[in-house]
Image (tube, rainbow, N blue to C red; front, side, top):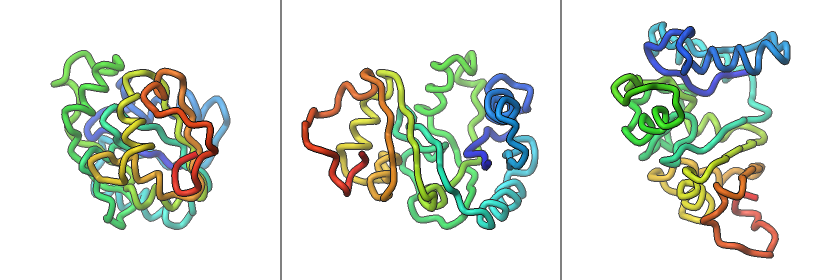
Length: 192
């Protein structure tokens, strides 16, 4: 199991730590023994190289992701870098992404949200044999619409999923509320 993203400078004990979340809600309950977590307290460049090397040696069978309110994938905020070949990169989080973290209750104030993070790159994510994307909640409806029905564009990072041959997107009624309705089966060149 490979970790998608983590805040730079956040301890694992912090409630918003993705390492903590994964250990408590996935690794411990399922007994996953082989995992590669991103240490937000270590040198970000070293973490990117170490976990990136392990990732490149173990192809991704299934990428489990979501879409952020601003259309981000992992912590690839708009405009996303669709070209970098590095498996992991250090990014500066945009204000919309940081506001989402406050809105979800992970941080009390915007100033409490770290400004940098380590994230899997878009190109690395697209090497997954299969991608499962789960996107609940009305606050993500606009991003879903742009990602599914809009053009593939770095200004909506999740739109790149339209180019992957094996993506399944799960939406609830609220997150799908802005999509145009169609009785036609999903097109093969679009997300299903």
